[in-house]
Length: 330
Image (cartoon, rainbow, N blue to C red; front, top):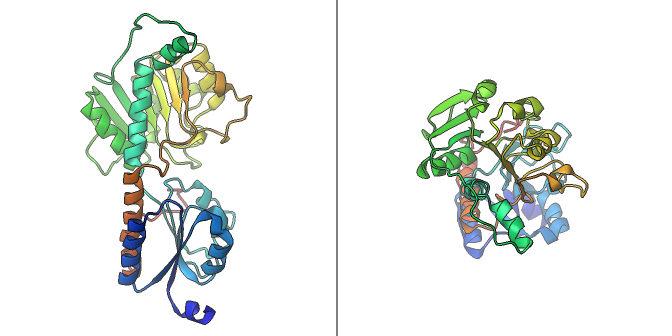
C-alpha cells in the first residue's frame, strides 16, 4: 500500500462539513487532475497525518495537521478566509515554497451578519432587549436607518464588496472603501482611498465596517486617537480580526457615550476572558466569531467549488485564483 501511495499524486482532505455531493464534486475534479483523493474527518487526525506523508495537496483548516506535513507538500488550501496563522514565520510549512490559498467564499454570510447587527444597533435592539429582560414594556425609542447613512468599509475584498452591495440596496447615502491599494475589483463604492487617508474619512463616517486581515499594517489601526475622530453617533462593526481595534479604548468610548454603539464578531484573545471590559461595555453586541462559519449551505458549496477550480489550475500549472502572498499576509 505504501509503495502504491508513493507512486500516486495524492490529495488529503481533512474536513467535517462535506456532503456526499461535495465529495462527488471533489472526486470528479481529482480524476480530471489525474490525482487520488482520500477524506478524513477531524476525529481521524492520526489517520490523516499518516496519509498526508504521501500527499502533495492538503485541503483542510488545521494548522496542527499542516505542521505534520512533509517537505513534499506543494499546496495547502485552507477552507478559512483568514490566513494569519499560516503567514507567521514560525516554520509551520516544512516546505518553504509550499503554495497557500484561502477561501474567499464567506462574503455572503458575513455581509448578512453585518446588516443584521447594523440594524440591531440603528433600531436600538440592545435597549429593547434590556427592557424585555427586566419585564418593561418600553415606549418607542428614536431610531435610525441604513437609508441615508454614510458608510465606510475598511477592506475592499470579497467581504467588503458584499457588504457594500447590501448597503447600496438599502439606500446608504455614500459608501467609501479603503484598502492598502485604494482599489477594488468591484464597482460598488462611491469613492475608494488608500488606508493612509483613513483619518480624513472617519470624521464623516456614521457606520464603520472593518473587514481587515491580521497584518503588521492593520494591527491597532482603530486606536484611541482614531476612535476620537469618529462622530458621536457613529457605529463600529468588526468582522475581520480583533487585532485591528484597540479594545480598551473602544470600551471606554462606548461607556462614556463618545460612540453610539459597536458590534464585534472578533476579539483578542478568543475566547474573551471573563474579566475583559468588552463584556460590560454599553451598547456593544458581541458574537463569538460566528459570522462566517461553515453552517450556511451556500458557503460550503462555494468553498468546495473554489478548491476544485484551483485544483484544475494547479494540475495544469496555472496560477491559483486564491493564492495568498504569505509575505503580505493575504
